[in-house]
Image 1 (cartoon, rainbow, N blue to C red):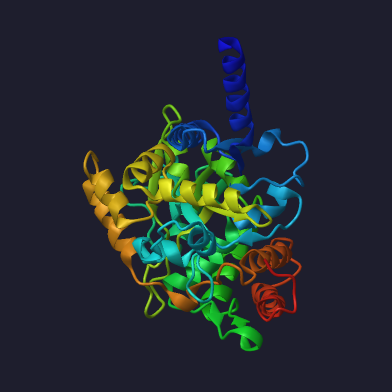
Image 2: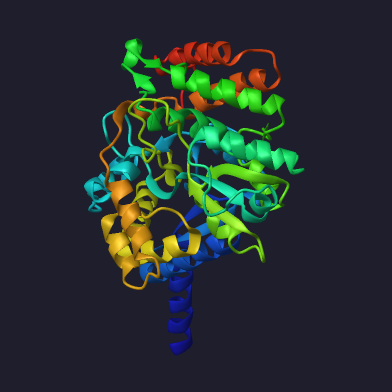
Length: 417
């Protein structure tokens, strides 16, 4: 009788394990960031006490990317690389409400929420992996070129002067950039008070060809011809060129700092994204957070969405955010996260600067919105600037064409995502 009871209990437990909800979370993280995510996923799974678990799925090991997971940690710009298709996502606010999970999006910093909300202001994904644009520079290269690494260039004219001295000192790649459209169009527009988005629906217009954008792209094109600037691709291709020492300056994502800082002996310098000081109403600090978020894919079951909602709630805990930010270098999502980080931080002044920047009001028309064709618009821009680098179009013609094509997307005439 006892052995029969044991067998029944074993069968029950095995059945319970099989029925436990399992969510695949696809990602492309590595190193310390992956270790941090894995640690947090294990902690979350332990808390579920067999009621479900999150399983990490590294993109590098996926044979058929068309087999979709339930969740993904990605920048929507990378959707095709992640899924070999363009899947639909469930809005986070909708998933949280249906699951009965308390979710107050006002807890998010305004600038953080602005990166993942739609045109109505509703948050579409959990912004756990956002970054800011910055200027990195190789301090040894600066010294060899007679530049002061304690005084990095603050304006694009100073960048030009530095690039010239670096080139004369023998550096074949003075400047490069990652994520070109976000840094050199969206952020340049934002810093100089030029709205990128005008109108909505059929009256929508993406103002890519403002005076400052034409001026900036034309300047970069002239630098390319002078070998001051090298373009390696629209994504993060340039990061490796800077990390290897091949390029002396890089405009890139703030999260790269944690990776570069761990390279033994690397003479890393970092500064704010440069601006134009000869343009009225320039606000150099008005840069736009952007990057990866936790997205929930459509087509799931209610129990799966409930588990995903619980995972989002878990990631929003201040102590979890603290561990995540420390392990990855991504921006904190909430004021509570800043407070948690301050308890044992060696750089309270940097945290205060981050709090002030992220607390700034949303910039509204400064950026295209999630779900309004943002990724496709960036793709269009990257396609058009390729003509500039190939000397087949001048800057203004490329931006005019990009604006017309992007307008079709914004109005719904083109393919949106």
